[in-house]
Length: 114
Image (tube, rainbow, N blue to C red):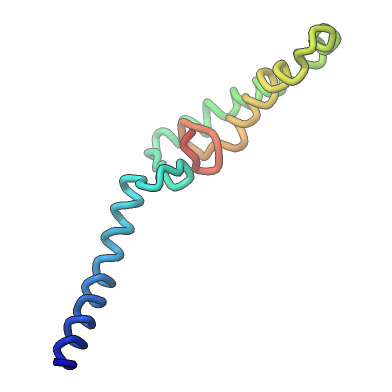
């Protein structure tokens, strides 16, 4: 009887270990954890090329122009108390899209899906 229990326990452990990669693959594909950091974003090559040649230069230009507009509007926004919101809208948001977003991705962040 002891050999039977050992065999059954060994087979159960073996089957459990054999199914772990399949469970991990399912969890990654379906993002069971709910954490957006584990979502896979694999954009196609044409999206990367368009992003590199068109979107990034425009976003960098928008960041520079936004910084200039922010400096010019700073006295008015300081009087109204909206320096943080103006800075975020004019400088941080375009800069985040230009420098933090992965190439070809549609959402910003380090491979995150917000």
